[in-house]
Each structure stands twice: as C-alpha cells, then as structure tokens.
Length: 174
Image (cartoon, helix red, strand yellow):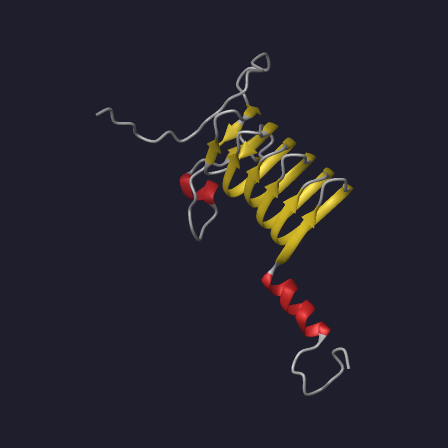
C-alpha cells in the first residue's frame, strides 16, 4: 500500500530520482525570503526575495513582486520584477515592461521591452558550440597579472556611465 506494492512498477524513490534527473519546477512564492546559495535544476519561478547566489540550470522567471539581490547564473532569464547584482546568462535575458534591473550582465542575447528600467554594463558574446567561447574567438580577457576576467574593464576609472549593447533588428521603411 502507498508505494510498497512490488507490482505497482513505480515507487516514491524512483519518482524522485526521475524528477531530479529531468529537472523539476522550483517555485518561491511571494512572501518567501531566502538568503544563501540557491541551486535549481529545471524551470524556476521566483516571487519572493532572494539574497546571495542563484544558480539556475534552466529558465528563471522573476515575477513582478520579486526582489533578487544576488549573483545569478542561469541558462535563460525572464524578468518582470527587480534584480540587482551580476547576471551571467547562457542563452537570453528578457526584461519585460515592469522589470527594474540594476546589474552587470554577460549574455549573448538581450531583449528589453519598452517601459523596463535597466542600469548596468552589458557584455555580449557570440555563442560558439563545442568549444570555450573566449579562446575560440580570440577575445579572452586577462588582467595585468594574467588572471582571466569575466568581462572587459572600463578604460577610465572616472567613466561610470553604464555601457549597454543590444542587437537591433534591421528596420526597413516602406
């Protein structure tokens, strides 16, 4: 009874293992507060407050009431709420009209909808399959001591203006 039947063919342990392997759905609703390192596999929806570090292997959705003040690594992010920190996104980040993003972003694709607020520095790199992207393009950045940098530094320390790069589609006027 309740998963102990040998003829049933599935047990709670197998279900949990399959869910972990395939990636599940993580939901932190409004009113939740998390501080520390959050690791999620699969789709993740955040409606509460996160402080610290977030690693999302999959899609990360930041709801309108959410506040994230963290270093974030994700495959893809859709932002409706507020995000602060450093964001490393493998595929794409989309800022919806209600988004308020105060972050430095490294991503190959950036989409900012009208009404979104974004202040920060964006570094865009081409996606190269099967190899280390920076080495393959010859654009690996290193500091004076030879340490690898995640993104290029601003030439002047006095230049505090945000640098933004976005892909703009060709527009034809008919």
